[in-house]
Length: 144
Image 1 (cartoon, rainbow, N blue to C red):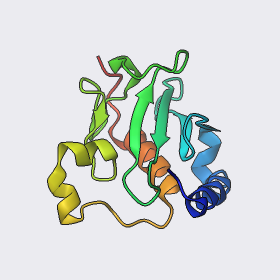
Image 2: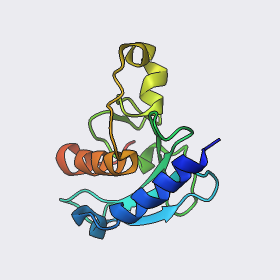
Image 3: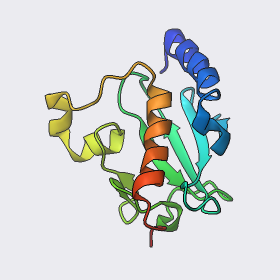
């Protein structure tokens, strides 16, 4: 359960994120099913018609985020075609194997024990910019 401090920090950061230069490329909305969650519709820089719905959820705002790509019309999270093929994103497994994601830490428990989770002051900003950087720099099409 999110603390009042985490909720206040998340709300404050959400306002700041909307001022980022990349934010003009995103459609952001709160994920009403969890206290610390957001849905971001994003696209690769080189292919603005390819829209992806990134669902970011935190159980604890100071730990890795859960990242799932969802089918935008239905909200389903079980479609590999909803995932971009980018470094660390695994459409066939429906997860992201990266040290800043909860799913990555589940796959690699040694990351948690070694402290591989990056220490960031703005978790929401870090996660959104990391997804956008992957889309802009390593996008190779939709999952199959």
